[in-house]
Each structure stands twice: as C-alpha cells, then as structure tokens.
Length: 330
Length: 116
Image (cartoon, rainbow over all chains, first blue to last red; front, side, top):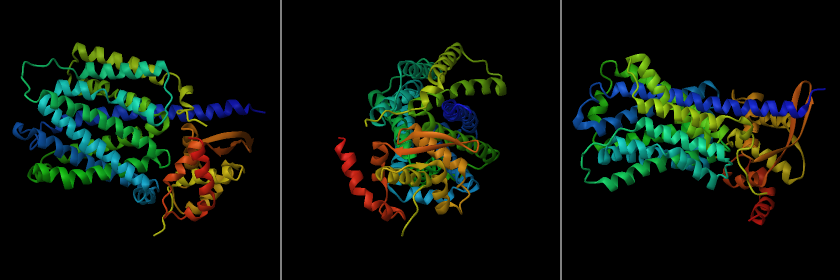
C-alpha cells in the first residue's frame, strides 16, 4: 500500500511548484511586454516629446483594452465566461473594482506624475519597493506567513530592481520634488494594495476571472475618465498607424499571459512571493534587449540582476513553505 | 434576479454547511454536487474543482481532516476553518444558494463573532 502522507505531500508540492512556475512566467512575459512597449513609444504618434505623458496614458489604455479582450476570449475558450457576471455583480465585484482603481488611476497616474515631477530615476527607485509594501500589507491583513529567509529574499528582489532601474539623477532642479516623491509612493502603494485586495477576492473567485474583471474595469476607466481628461482622442485615433497594431497585439498577448499567471501566482504562492518573483522582469528585459538589439548591459544592470536572482532563489527555494500560506487564529 | 455563486465560492459554501452540521464532505461528493449545478459549463471538471479545493486549503479557509485512497485516487475529507466561515459574509443576498445558507447563517455569525 502506498504511503498516503507522501502522496498528499507530492500533490500539495505539485500545486506549490505550479504557483512558482506561474510567477516566473508572469515575470518573463512582463519583460517581453516591456520590450515591445519600449519599441512602441519610439513610433508615431507616441514619439512626440511634447505629448509624452499623454502618449504613455494612451498606450496604457490600448494595452489594457487589448489584454482585457484577449482574457475575455480566453475565459470563453475555457468555459468560464459565465463566472464573469457572477463575480462582477457581487461584493467581490466591488473589491475587484477597488483593485482596478488602485492599479490604474492611483498607481499608474502616480507613476507618470512622478516621472513628470522628479524624473524617471527617482520614480523607478521608489516604485520598485511595491513588493515590500505588498508583503507587509499581506502579513497584516491576510495573515500571510513569511519567514526570515523569504523576507530577505523579497528585500533582495526589491534592491535588485532598484539597482537595475537606477540612473544617476541629473543636476535638474525639480520644483515639485516632494510632491513627486509622494506621487511615486502613491504608485507603489497602489500596486501593493492591488495585490492584497486581489488575493482576498481570489480566495473565493477563480483568479482567471478576477483578472478579467479587473482588466475590463481598468480599461473602461481609462477610456471614459483618463482619455477625455487628457484630451487624448486625437492621439488615440492615430495610434494604429504603420506596424503599431501588430506590436500592440503582441504586447496585448504578452500582457494577458503575464496578468493571468501573476494572479494565479498571487493566489497559489501568496502576495509577497508572487510580487517578488514578478519583479524579476528586468532580467528578461536585459536579456531580450541583448539578444534583439545587441545592447550590452551596464554594470549596474548585471549587479542588479544577480541580486534579483539571489532574492528569487531565497523566495521560492523551499516550496514546502507554501503548503500553508496563511496563519489564522482558530 | 438570482445569480449562481462563483464555483469556487460555492465549493466553500458546501464545505461550510457540512462543517456547521458536524458532518463530513469529501472530494467525491463535492465534485458530484458541483456537477449537478454547474455541469453544463465547460469549466466544471474534476481537475478544476480539485484545484479550487487545493487553493482553499493552501490559504487556510478549509482543512483537510482525513485522506484515503480509492481506485488509485486520493480522496480527502474537509471541514471549514473559522476564517472560512467568516468569508461566508461575502455571500450576496441574490445568490441562488442563499436560501440554502439561511438556516446556518445565525449559527455561523455567532461562531465567528465569538472568536473575536
């Protein structure tokens, strides 16, 4: 007779490893997505320096819209489409809408306003701390269990991401420096909160449905509130020129895979771990840019990547710790 | 208009209902009951149901109290944790299975409030 305990452990470990796999796929596809979007911003009509902020928001709107359509099609294919309405028209739906507000208007606007007020380097460094914020919030609100090794791993991933994104600040004087810092923190807080609210909803809702509702709500918010606010319909209509449509579709596919696997990862491995493994994406961006453009990475990028790899190993090294993600009082 | 609960939530409801009656529910029975309600949907397959159960277990909303093997398959028996009962507060009033939950609602509220 087979040992039941070992079979149960094998089943549970398989589940935990699938969670880690999902988190890593989410990081890789987010890297691919970033490279594609990096190319898109150099193309007409997004390459006009006078409308850089508007262009970023319009790309975010198109990108979210395409990914929401693709995820809906995927849900239709897997036979889960009816779950969409069940989730949306309930208390869980309200929580996912909060998720969409946190990640869309709150985080994305904070990120872009941060870049505008304090430049990309400070903003990248501050917003990179979102996995640490997510982990702290998850420990407080979701009673997530994280041991010292995992916490060190999360901190290393954050430090690595900061190192890869860091560019020496210039001598530029920023008149709204402190406001910019607040905006960048707002973005990090928004992404951290999204993970916690999302994980709470996914406790009782399929992650593939939760992300579908979140992306659709996010897209509608961009379309009806953000784009009219920035008066961006002209750029939006010109967005499909040349090869842009093909790049947008490819980015939409990468983004959809990334978001589905990220939400699966949040649900299967916990907020702290999923966010830390998701932030491994700079490694893939650097590798892809090296393969595609032959761009040799700078020393800070190599050091940052090595720190991220070490952090990711510490975070995901022992799947047995993921068999019980939270500790509730009985 | 009455709506069905998301399938994962319905699985939690079934386990909570049995737990409050101090009865046991196992993987087989969960699959059978879920199939009766969601059987016409492609998502309703043993694999997806088992994944939802494992997810509920990993986050501590349900507990696996006994495991045995039957025809080369692992069959587990489950009960709800206090946090699992607590999440039933998210059940919408217009859910098809809300009526079924009503007889247990008071007892579960008393139980979850007592723990605070």
